[in-house]
Length: 531
Ligand code: AHR
Image 1 (cartoon, rainbow, N blue to C red):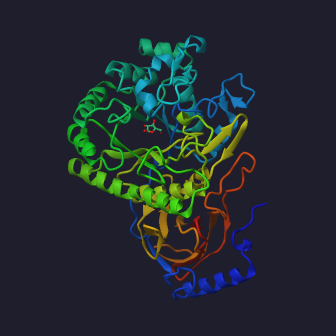
Image 2 (cartoon, rainbow, N blue to C red; image 1 turned 135 degrees about the vertical axis):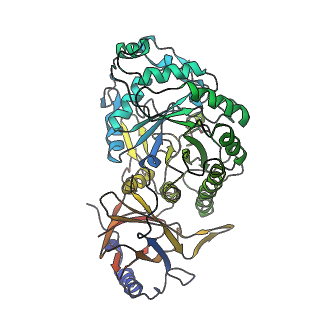
Image 3 (cartoon, rainbow, N blue to C red; image 1 turned 45 degrees about the horizontal axis):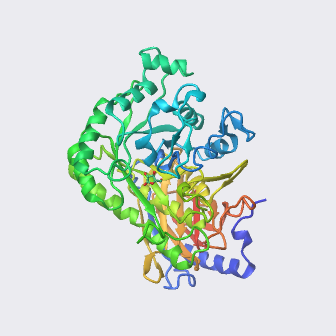
């Protein structure tokens, strides 16, 4: 049985909470809590609605990497692990429950070495290759185009396929797109598709024109990458509706890349990808910090690092505005998330890591940032879906566990296709060593049915913080929702304890006189629906 967080508070703390709430509702700053002595005040302008939050910012990335596909999504039809046509049943059910809107495949670095013809036709005839990027393991191509498109269809998710620009040709990409999208019986490739089991075309929502062309995708200069992007984009033509072309974009603060790509390819593409990975120790890729058992200093540095996403988006968008003031071209953050040292004892090429409450907070903060930039950021993909980096799900043979990041995505489902509402926050900071960041982050949306949802994140791992939210343009008298928190900073779900971190009901918010008042427990994500 789940327990409401408020109901779980000891009597003395519960009385203190209600004292603070009463004062806050009366418009008086609550007493204790924030050491700075201040109630955090936020304002939501529901009377000044912002742009739509595209559901696709909740997209997920599934690469041929480690056990991300094989074992994680695909076990094959003959497997003893329960499956539907080869797809793990538990993974499908978990992903359907959070309404995954979009899946990006097959890479990543893998994409620029992938040849689509290796992954069609009878399984026994598919070539076995070496996955040179990720652990040097065999790739038997048993998960190919039909298997990926079938997976996306089962999830009712839009498909995002990344083409091989680095070691492929424009003709290879053009034929792949034709194979996937040409009308039934309209060409030899359409007939080949039918012979392989699929008569009707699929819809391809996004085509990636290579991946990280500045690095594993070919170590190119931006000028060369832009020329190639134009060439590949020119010949890739969908036969089944609008297919948005996403160029390989910058990483982190590579503003020169964005400027050059927008100047030379801004008219041929529909989106520019941004990749940014959050690391506790960001000075050295060989020493990123552990996923579990970290000190508070690394809780703090991780959250400070992830908040740089806001600056990167702001500055890349400003450059894009120079060439595209109408914001026709989206900034697609199609790889984001935490990257830690690999789980001890695992194959380092498999990028396996545990996922803790810290990851859920990282996810929530990034969702707030994407929501704030909804006009330009209309698609994103967390890296990655299963078993790799900041995974939503972890599997081990027949066992599966939902991570705290999964639960963060679950909490934010009302954000999908909702209208963003402008928010301002005025309150204390969370400080640790050299880290100095806002203690509270707030995001709000109005869903398509008209209900307003408010998300509040307290990044401080030690202090509960009183918050008052001024609700401009909202008529509400009550709020209820769920909280994601835990005692330890690195609390996580293991196969032995799969339910250690999961949302619980949260009833400790009051609404009166156009204000919402609550007290946020340390290191928590609270998502409320106003009524
Ligand atoms: O997500 C793992 C890798 O990170 C991807 O393959 C690549 O695009 C990025 O560098």
